[in-house]
Image (cartoon, rainbow, N blue to C red):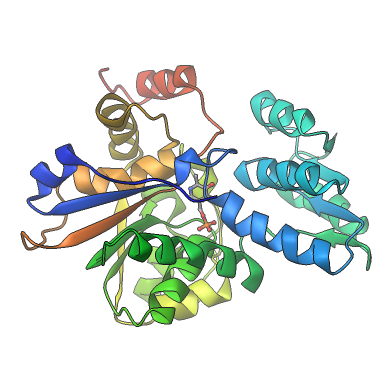
Length: 304
Ligand SMILES: *Cc1c(COP(=O)(O)O)cnc(C)c1O
């Protein structure tokens, strides 16, 4: 689906440049996953997939459920016991079979993998070229709208968003900085950039659960070794504060995973020239409610 591209007056004024918001939060399932997962599911459907298998309790799982329903292909999603009822309800509303199994994602994923066959296709949440192809369309839409970006700011979990955006920029001959943002507790890419190694973190922590991949995909790591990629980390508190500011300024509720990127602009962590077009990927997220954000604010002593 084509998403809106809008200029943020507030963030443009704050950062003394043109800040453009690619509103991936406007997708039916509330995040950019509809592009990545959507494209992958469409490709596999064409190749005769009989069933989709997923183990994501977050936005990826919700998008697999939605796409399966659209394509009339049955979906099985195995999620760990820690998965929120909100997410399970969203998946079941799309007629997915949801199996709650195991205390961690690893156990849920093992069961999910046992269902995979040549007809039953596993949809990876972030590590497959189909996903990146789907995401790369975003850049074409931005250019078609008449905006040529001078920089991109986006969040990184497992790295499909970064992979797809870099691919889209390369396709159109744009070599511009990409600011790759994580929270301090989920800094698998930023740590890999520092160490110049494709590391795996021992643990991931904090409220940006959607960014909590212990290791980014190999493609994202390889991209991060190029000089146009600039890593940034922000605190949970900064990410959360940005969610509230964005809700007030743009009337859109996003996850802390997306707030992380927005906080870079709200907190003026970068400086751009006055004529620069800065493209901010508002990756969105449907896994939190306003009440949850308010509870996080209480836990982090953030005054709201
Ligand atoms: C999946 C997701 C991310 C992280 O994307 P990756 O491709 O895993 O890096 C960030 N924000 C939201 C809202 C997401 O759904």
